Image (cartoon, rainbow, N blue to C red):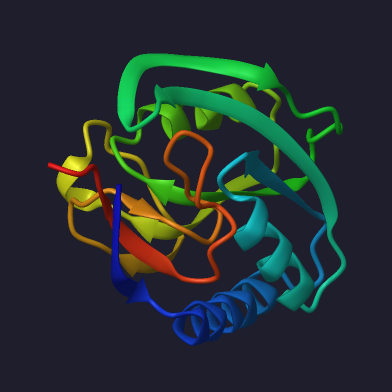
Length: 173
């Protein structure tokens, strides 16, 4: 396995988190907001951004998967669902990366059936080249090229999530 030089450094990551948090704080000022993190990948970004958002929040999580190692299965599995009552609340869905959009779209549709006042999506990384489902993204950290990345919560076979930076990952040839 080969991990290349950082695509995004720890400093760049934290700077962008603060920038997104300021925008979210401004947009949601005075509103009842529940932040929903998509696990496992978003746990680091979720933790950093909710601590930087300057308004009161309620938290919850959803665990969903559609990947095995680096390959998408095309089937979205929900392993843990949102437990909070989100009807009549503003929901901020927080994800680490949007790739094909299939997983996020299914989660989005699931949330919308529960009649939130609004639903906005925040993702740290957007891999637009791979998009198969057109999904609205309200807050985006970085648009990145179509390369497999690890670090800052992103993994390959559950490894490398702990890296404080984001790097391109390649299997050894």
